[in-house]
Length: 311
Ligand SMILES: [Zn+2]
Image 1 (spheres, rainbow, N blue to C red):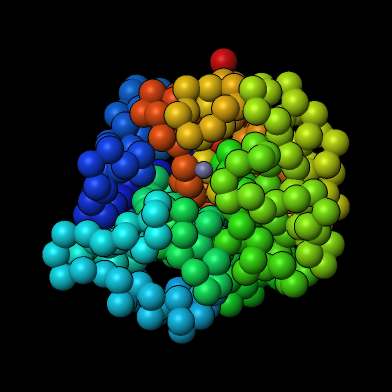
Image 2 (cartoon, protein in one colour; image 1 turned 90 degrees about the vertical axis):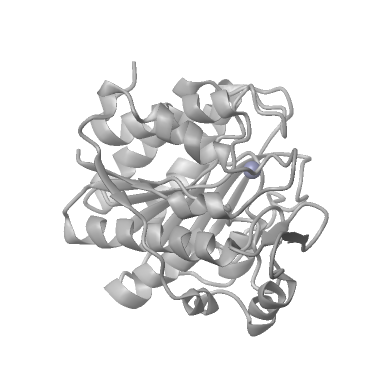
C-alpha cells in the first residue's frame, strides 16, 4: 500500500485556553509518533488552505454567521461551554479541510491508496446549524460532499470510531441514502445522541459500547453490525472519522481500547475497501486527548494503513 500523511502546521494557530484537552500539542505528539524509522516511506505533504465557503456545502448560512460573529479580533472566545474559537481559527479550519481535499485528490488519482490527515479542530460534532463539542466545521462531511460533487462518486461511507457519537455527521446525512454513516461510541456519554434506533433512511448504524468495556466488545459490535452493513452498502470510497479517545488512557471517556484494537478496525475497513472501492480510504483525525494514547493509536492506525499489518 502507499499511504499519504498530511501534516497541518496551521492547526497550531487554533490556540486552546489553558487546560483545554483539544490543544496543539496533540498534533506535535502525532508528528513525533510518525517520525520513527518504520514510517520513513510515508508520502508526506503539508495541508494547504482552501476557501472556507466550501463549508457551505454542509452547513447553513446561520452556522457560518455564528463563526464570523463569535471569532474575536484577538485572543479567544467561547461558542459554548466546551467550544472555543480564536482569532486565527479560520486558518486552522481551512487548512484542515484542505488536508482532506488533498488526500481525496491523491486517493482518487491513484497516486496513493489511502491517506491520514492529522488535523484540528475536530469536526464530527458540528451540525448543519451549530458548531459544538470542540468542533467548528464538519471536516469529514465536507470531504464526503466534495467526493460526490467534484469526483462524481455516488456512494460514500463514513466510519466513525471516535469514542463520542458524531451527532453532526449524522445530522448532515440523516436523510441521504448516498452517504452511509456508522459510529461506535460509549453510551451514555456526550453528546447523548446516537441511539441504536436512530437509523436515518436505512443509512445510519449506531453501536453503543458500555463504560469500562474493552476491544472485545468493540470487535463483536463491528463484526455483528457495522462491517456487514458497510459491506452491504458497497461504497465507492470510505472515509474514517479517526478519533483515538477510546484508548484506555484517555481522560474524557472510559473505554479500554489498546493500540491493536485501532489496528484491527483499520484492517477490517481496508478489507472492505479492497473489495468495494479499489482500496480508497481517507482518514481524518477527530478526538484523542491523552498524548501517549493518541500517539499509540495513531501509530497503529497508520502502520496498518501503510503495511496492512500490525505487530
Ligand atoms: Zn471524541
